[in-house]
Length: 242
Image (tube, rainbow, N blue to C red; front, side, top):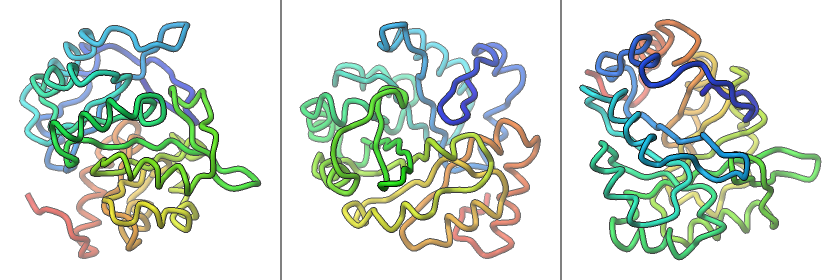
C-alpha cells in the first residue's frame, strides 16, 4: 500500500514487492524497516493476521536489518508470531487507547525496548489531534496529555507520524516538537513528509528527534535512499557506516 494523507492505494502484493524491491541490498541504506498491516475490512477490523505474517516472511527473506512490525495488534499471543516472522519490535497504535492492558502486558513480558507507540496526528487551528484506526477515529483529549498517557504505558519508543504531511514529500511538521515535552525522555522517530535528504537533515538536526523515517524516498525516488544516506554521512550525521 502507498499512502498520501492516510488515503491508501494498492500497488501490488508480496510477489510484486519481491520483484520490484530488494530488501537484502537496501539494508545498507536504512537502519530499521517498519512494516505495518494496514488492510482493513469494511467494519474497520484488521484482515488476516496470518496472511500478514506470511507476506512479511516473503518480502524480508535475506533481509539483515532490524524489523518493527505492527498493525491491528490486540493480544500478547500475537507477539511471538511476529518475532518468529523476524520482528525485533512491535508497533502499536489503536491499542494504545483501546486496550491499555494489552500494551502494559506486552511491555511487562517483552520489555519496553520491544514496544513502539505509533502516534498519528493532525494539525488544526486549535493545535494537534491524535487519531487511531488507520486515521479514521479521533482520540478525545489534549495532545500533550495524551502523549503523557502513552508514555506512562511503559513503551520504549515513539513513532510520531503527521497525517497532513504523509506521502507529500514536503518535509516533516517540525512545529509538533514544541508539544512533546511529555515524551522527551523517550526516543522519537519523526515520520510523515520526508521527500529528500534535506528533510532528513532537518529532522536529525533537532535535539528532540532520535531517528527519521521515510516511505517517499523508498517508494518513488529510485536510488534516493542510498544517495540520501551518502549525503547525510557527508554532512557528519551520526549514522552507521557500512
